[in-house]
Length: 241
Image (cartoon, rainbow, N blue to C red; front, side):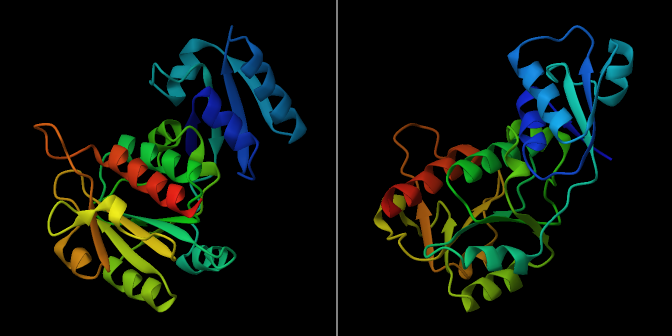
């Protein structure tokens, strides 16, 4: 069983097609968004109950749960073929690839940016990577409910498949990379971002058609991966618009 934590993530889940089984509201919670959650749950025929603090804590010790949680089935990943099929519906598809990103807070923040920038699908590596958890869902502000996300075992093979389908592979890297604003993104793009400490792997980098970097003016030479990903995604969006 998966738990969605927080008011906005729960509301987003209720407004999507996710199979929510139950909504719990901490006794005493009030306000417009609480009322909106109750109405959304009622429309879908989903039970929405108030529960006391001690019982609420059995579901989550998170002090930032905002007094609302929802129970759902384990996260349903899409297949790579489903993502590619959906991407074909747009003239300039954009797929985001996360190469061994391990911090669930980073993954959640990245997914939020991905949804806001119109990404067609997100590919996660299965090994040495954070998966979709309640923390990821909460940090994403519910973006996990609106994105097509898949997990893959072999990124190298997946990149080859993406290339066969007409995608150009753009990797975020600090080495041997062009300024991120100097690349023309008005083509089908798969953007690859890498591990918090090591970046994208060498084999992954070798398979990229372009490597891009964000120039730094300060003494720190790299941005948090979620911040960097947001900058890159919105540069792509800016060029395309």
